[in-house]
Length: 495
Image (cartoon, rainbow, N blue to C red):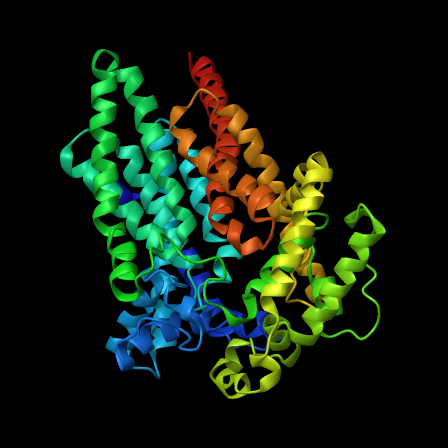
């Protein structure tokens, strides 16, 4: 601890990171979100976190939408309760700004966590931890989230906290139990962080194979059981609550997550579209807001009958799909969400044909996968991976000129860092402590590209943050070797 306090370079980086985030909160957010319908504290998901807590507080029911039964399971309680803590302490009028201030502090602490993780991975390196801290201190794609009531900042902090805790690697009862508890907390904030559980167990098994080979199996099984126990102690409360309160065994959340605008009509349509393209927005607009023909591409069909079936289903979705109705009227927007109940009394919304639409599009998807398995598992995933690595613009930015050029430059910077991370992985191929970093990064990119297929860049935020660690390792490897070379020449010259 004293070494950290005396490290003036690190303290300078931490101060700079804090000031950049504070400046974004005070000034930058209003500039960046100027073209957004939401203010600097909210986005499309905010209302679900806020209402989940306030409905529990005011009505005794944990849900963000009383008219959607699945909304009672749609948000895991981690972030709603994090918001709720600020709501209770600072009141409803100041909860948002208080939470933003907390997220500024958490994201500043993440700069330190990057430094500490790299120092554990490379204990003899001088530049590598400092480079990693610098990369994160000024990383724009985390900074832009510090004001938003959403999971991004907290989830990033928790995954870096997990990495530092994991790299301590002890076989004690409290360590392994605490590791499981920490993973459960992260899971309750973002459910996909549950993958940290198998990654942790695999990492501990690999590490202990090298240091305790005679007792490896017994040690590994004991540690895996304790990590699982720690996770289960917190996790079990969720399915038990769901079963006792609603007589439904929901392990994580239902497919629609309780969002009225993501009902089965929209979910099945998007699942079919993602068989042949990763961009459903064009076709969503055609159905919900368009008036002309749908013009689905020929590659989406095997027979003229399938095209006719798709056109019929799309017409039905436009006519009586409840999700498409909400999309068309704009009532799914968070700023208007409290008015949705008024519109749902409308017969056009109530008399929906969601089941017909869902069954039809699921049949089209099944047929596509059966006829084109190779294309299904390659075309859209490759499109997603290309977007994940080489995206050049932000969806929220519609203006041209200098602002669009700046955004394009930032995404180019992100791409360069990702490519540098690949180099860092190659440099670190013998470093086992890099395994959990690579495992999480690889899982998220492959899972979203191949399985989810709905490529939203914010889903990759924690994976991108983890990629800064091998990126810093690549840069630090060069700087540290160069410094060592210079030192050797100086010693030879002095001799």
